[in-house]
Length: 140
Length: 76
Image (cartoon, rainbow over all chains, first blue to last red; front, side):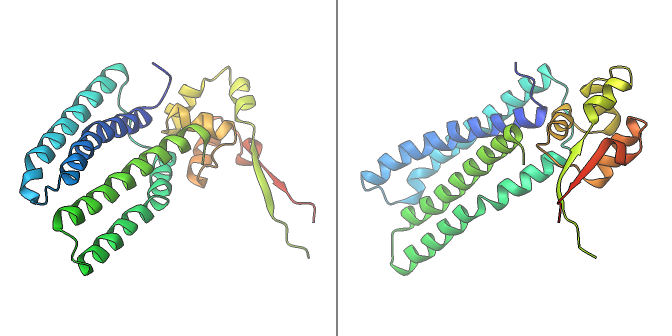
């Protein structure tokens, strides 16, 4: 494998697990929402399955990464990259929260509001992880 | 007196590593306590390290700090 740090490998694993797990959830949840399913408990089994899938991907990915290279603690550059990425992606979460609150004011069904909030959290995390990879490769 | 500002901070880590008997990036990273990728990022100017890390690098290379890191000031 490429000569990348354990930290960078971990970010790749998190990104793939997130997109593979929650991304798949959003595909199916989107179809359910499009069909007019507005009862939140109907989404619970799908969400639980997505979470389990994501955790398994994370565990398996990190186990393989640890076998190929000895895990090393994050250093100052890794921490700085993490802070900078989060600072530049948090606007997505804020936007989702404001959209959710606006939805509440407009009496939008709870299933939509829940997915707006979850979606903004998902996109915020995808952006943060993508920025971390960018800063790891191209520098700060 | 005119106030000078730093335009950029160059470094001579690669040269110092060679002078130190071909010390590898990995060896230097181990001595400093950072990843090899961080040493590479510093060497190539993609990352400016903290003062603590800069001092540790200079110490590991057995050089004074200003021989490893060189400030480029503006001409004003």
